[in-house]
Each structure stands twice: as structure tokens, then as C-alpha cells.
Image 1 (cartoon, rainbow, N blue to C red):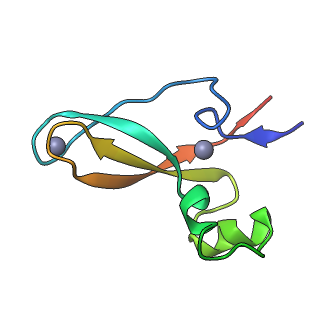
Image 2: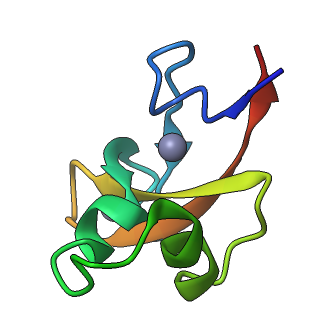
Length: 80
Ligand SMILES: [Zn+2]
Ligand SMILES: [Zn+2]
């Protein structure tokens, strides 16, 4: 069995509410994709430690469509 992030794999779509303006926050992708720019030689496992998230969580960046604020959201990985 594999633990995968439902958002990265398109199983689920998640919308968050902006705590500043109440607008709609959309998924900008996993944080690890951004960290890769700075740590191209790290394996995926090490990167997960670097971003401070537990192994069963995938941290995504959500951005508000209205005011542009962004927020990190921990997404629970699921078994497939
Ligand atoms: Zn993810
Ligand atoms: Zn907002």
C-alpha cells in the first residue's frame, strides 16, 4: 500500500477559505516543488524532512484569489 497525497495525485480538490478576506484559496501545489529549486540534489524523502512536515502529510501552498495572501496547508496522505 502506498501513502499518497490526494491533491498531488488529482484524487481530490481542496478549497480553503482565506482568513484575511474570506476569499477562495486555491491549491498552488506542494511545497516540495518549490523547495526543489533550492535543493536539487536532495531526494524526496529528505526534502520532506526539510519542510518540517511529518511523513504522512504533504504540505501545499494555497493562495487567495482575491487578496493574494498565501498559506501552508498540511494535507493528510491517503492509502491507495
Ligand atoms: Zn501534495
Ligand atoms: Zn484573501
